[in-house]
Length: 190
Image 1 (cartoon, rainbow, N blue to C red):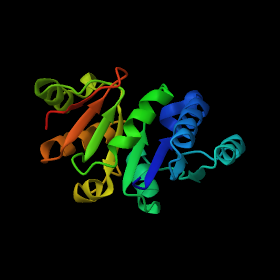
Image 2 (image 1 turned 90 degrees about the vertical axis):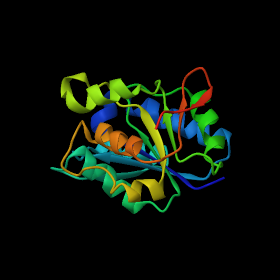
Image 3 (image 1 turned 180 degrees about the vertical axis):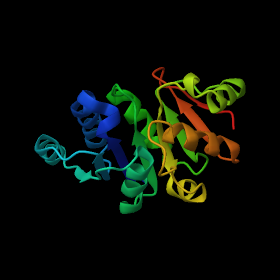
């Protein structure tokens, strides 16, 4: 199994953070996957420190930083080959995480979009040019090499950092797969 780092930001997950941590912890324990779990936040909260310790996560507070900068910081602090950004308001089911983990062993995949269907080219263009058309971001697992090639997330962007990164990822010849709750993987449109 390739090394995997799950990165969860508290400002995005909010009150659902314990569910995110629990489902990731369950999926990696069931697959006996060696991974790291990083929690980033803009604010320091003792409850978050305790919660991170309960799930064996590393908790980092970066006050006054945008989402893009926090994600870049967590990614650079990790040495994992795969970085999984769990940035959705509701947690994924354990079965979907377990279906994703074996995909990361394949050299035929550069990125995996989880939890929602891949938008079509016109939908991506609409999202790019109309900020009001942005949907809640999907989960994404990406190889470290592709994250580095694209320069990571824009450190000045907050909520739109993931969408900006996805647009740049689609503009490159990456092999993106989509994994939905139907537990089926299909090649994405790149």
